[in-house]
Length: 187
Image 1 (cartoon, rainbow, N blue to C red):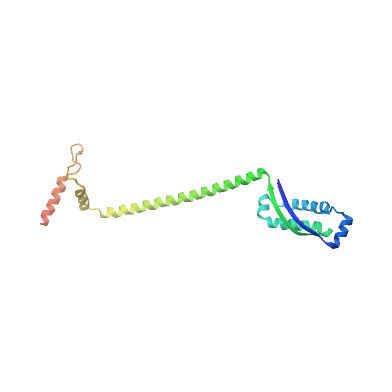
Image 2: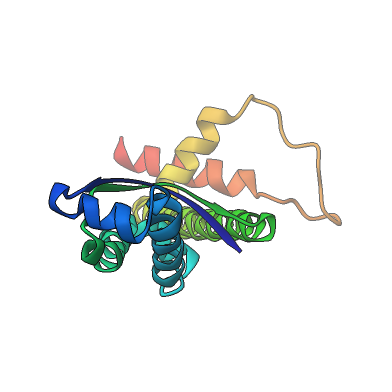
């Protein structure tokens, strides 16, 4: 259900004033104008749904003015201006509009969340690719000498205390002997 308020400013053509007074009387506003306004407003409003009434307000207003003019002009009454003051909708309709707006906002938020998640996932993929390339480059550069150098730099001078089933985890003697043989060959 829609309730509307319109304001219509009209004038009486002086050449028709005597005829209006003689044929209709002093109450021409209630006899001619108000019924024409009510009929035309209802007629025009029925052509549109509630959303269209709001979004196409200037078109609706022009159409109302045109129909009212067609009704009252033959009596010598002319519309100066018509303004739609308000469209008031039922509580059920207002609640439905609010629910629709809420649903649209939630859908928009969900779309934005999905886009954010996709960007974050793409960032993780790119980070993993970069790490993979980094490991590949490091792997290409690692040699026995680099490993030995790292071991010696980090060694605190103590032999490991962990053993495994009677065999050593590292054969440190072979590493030391290999290095000392290489050093002897260089000298």
